[in-house]
Length: 288
Image (cartoon, rainbow, N blue to C red; front, top):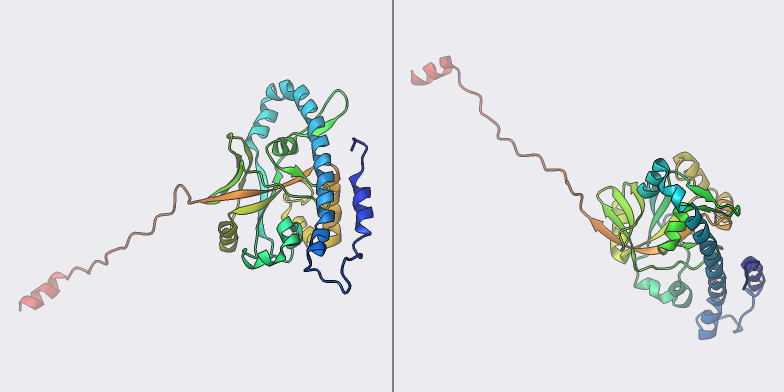
């Protein structure tokens, strides 16, 4: 495959085989049918990996060129290091957010595994507060935070059948209401303040992981617009496609670590009800 390769054309041609079966009548439980059902996602995943690698290689060259300027701009460099993000926590079982959770290889080839797994997967949607773009002298452009995230294990989404990686060195850490996406080398890819529900915590705890969608296209900075977008499937698909084609949306399945708040609220101290003092007149009556 070369840089001019358009994996979307291959995916479209393969999609024409969707109505072909190995069994008549169709029995999706047979081995060959299961293998076949996983063929299109796997081939699409291979093409997506090429798409991702091309973007990263081009981005490496741009990043190397602009690195001195980045270090010499305190404001730009501070925003890059702070990694502040808008965030939304959701569940794959939510009618609005479920379409953002792609099926895994296990879902395709071994659907019975669903009986042993928690039905809900925790979702983490992240969008940097500030888009940090950079352009080289060759007019190649990158978004620095997306490039860093993909360098540390996330993968750009390239199609609806994109394979989501599971990088072992990335962890989503939730401490109270403070969420961070961290790499084992100490790099923090994202920081956000969130309000996790008990159901989200339970799903993250049950599976020990969460699906992270990082980048642009979901308008997380505007809550009303985001909710409207999520309720409009056609528009949502269009926005995701535009962001993906621009290399501005990446994903990964990361481990989750839930930690208590460093300063948990103290329970109120029980108060001892004081009995009212008796007046002198009452005391005199008692003596009498």
